[in-house]
Image (cartoon, rainbow, N blue to C red; front, side, top):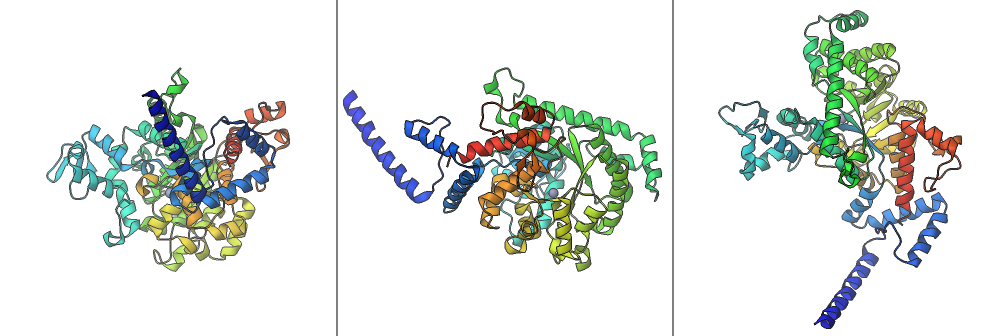
Length: 536
Ligand SMILES: [Zn+2]
């Protein structure tokens, strides 16, 4: 009995090995390497690879990615495992998936309109049902997901732009009271695809500053208006925002068991570093925009968890188009009061035909020259700006990074392939990094952004690696960079002789890393790349 069973197992093993061999030879060169080599031969191979120059290892990895391109799933698997640094452009409420928000809405017994799928507070009126009904009504569940995301969207149902932005007011209520769970989902997803750092756009004050603005009259003198708002109780909102961020972060840690004494119980998301950016809603009236901006600058100044100011909402809408220049002047004024606060701005998230040609001419330039943006979100219409090549050269010289959101641009603007300016940015030497924008609404993730960069934009591994490194180099974390030359990634003197795979770090390098949160993240990324590239 035991003998015949052993024979069957042996035959089965041979068949499996044959299948594996044929698959490996035809499909891809990419393979998972066990953490510890199983055989002496594997150990020798790994030692040989470790002795190679970093350039040779990168080249070998490049070849593995080229081979993986033969199959989309193989490419996804390769890219998922690739270290991707940080996601610098991520709206937290647009990043959580509809399925999760349905759970929140069901838990809170919010009402959902059966026609529009918009949520409202209970009690439910005619035409509305308890969101929890979706647990036993598959058609409702399906329709809620489709209305709250780009799943199943097609052009016959309206523009991608409108469907995309219409999702937010529909599901908006769901996230209230659940931000810790939102952070937990995003952290775990980031960890699962080797993203180590997130800068989430988080409305930390629950938009209190918009209501606060109604107590004030518009005044063309920004200085007077700022003082009136500071005297009128803005600090209370800053304090609320700080408390919210701390509470939500603690809830996230609790959900992920990040403080459990048993390290094995801690979920992967605990390893992901999260910081926040306050997203000012630019489609509101000018007093409300000013109040939000002032809150955003004060918060970034006072709370190390909140690292920058941004301005969001569709640029083609009436108010953002009409008040764009005024908004940049407000940012300019506040930058003078708070020069240490980082600024990233959505700019040029526009395509020909969405606005008159004159509307495409100046948003990116003004965001940099008047708004002091250190990073530009999207930058899609750059070639339609005045003197675009001059602007590209200026961005390269001033080291302004562009957060490239390929999936979002394809859905919202219909811009992809050759119509996308990514190749122009790369050619001009403008630093770029891939970002997700709203991965929940888009039904995407960071890996799929990398996949689009390869399949739609034709990027190679070396360029992707540079973008991952850029994402940490341009993160708004405090501290000096690990790189003395961040274009060629030459380390600072203190760490020049160190290697991330060495068991020990030299004393000067250790001291340098200790003094810089940014350099710590960069070191961690280099370590991940060294491990990743040894697999090929
Ligand atoms: Zn965005």
